[in-house]
Length: 365
Image (cartoon, rainbow, N blue to C red; front, side, top):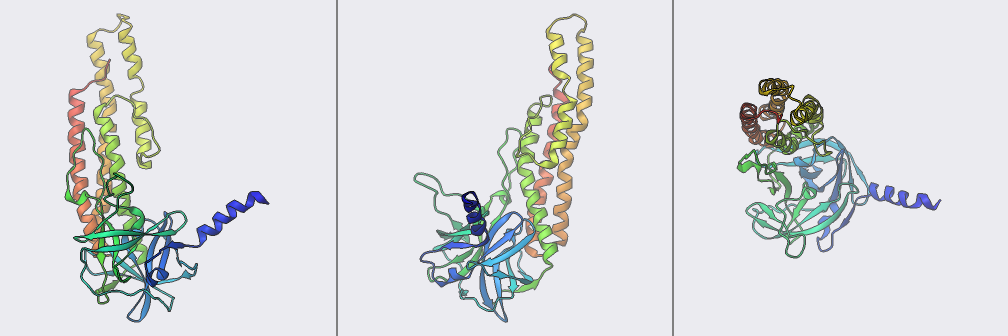
């Protein structure tokens, strides 16, 4: 019986959102844990016009919606979804079956001041209040420890309300941009790639428009997949361009869509070490001409895999272009239109690098 006690405790804990929100006033009582298939994020209950809504960010829904609960554990049923008719504002309001909310919106322009936001544990939905600063519409986050720089963004505050010193809501935390790694081969520069937390302003008289929740969440999922894929894709492409005839080690963080390509590509070059060793052993059976013939054959054998490496980009760019033209919300259209040109730049660069490497490098035989 004792063996069951600890797992049962964590099971109960996972089902009840909890907030450590000292000095945040009554607004903290309206916090909501939003569960998606990727884990918990947050929102806040507010009475607007003729109903009670959960205010959160569209960026929260990387994957399908599962449930919403207040910090007291009460389930909330979503009745409809509405987005702001502004491509810069990613706030989402979800009408619920609740009839009470104590949080208030303050109709004031965002200004540089100290604010409170909430970090949400993605596994358990536990929320913790964090003091931050406002600076030109972006959050100025506190450093994690002594002599450590402040992070440029935190994923676990996305969807959080931004409370001013009075404890009123002045905004919702979003996430703008995409993060790319630094590689030896590729340099992709774009202002849209500066990943950071932004604050979407919230006012009582914002222009709202109803959206299809399923279409919206599908587009958000596609957009986030495109952003995340780009990071790890460039790392693999960088390894290939540095050494076209060296096997690429399989790692857990590599995109699932690329693993079949990596395996097939590694298989295509598996004979290179044996041929190389055969030359080094000096059997005398293979002269320079035959050596070059073998190298050329292997190069032709690996070319299709280099071309397939380039072809990953158009697939994602087509999805982004679709969102940019048919996005369910103006905010999603804008985000997709910013990332799509980056994919075009990466595609052109990978194709160019592929052609250069195949022309100047032969297998080391």
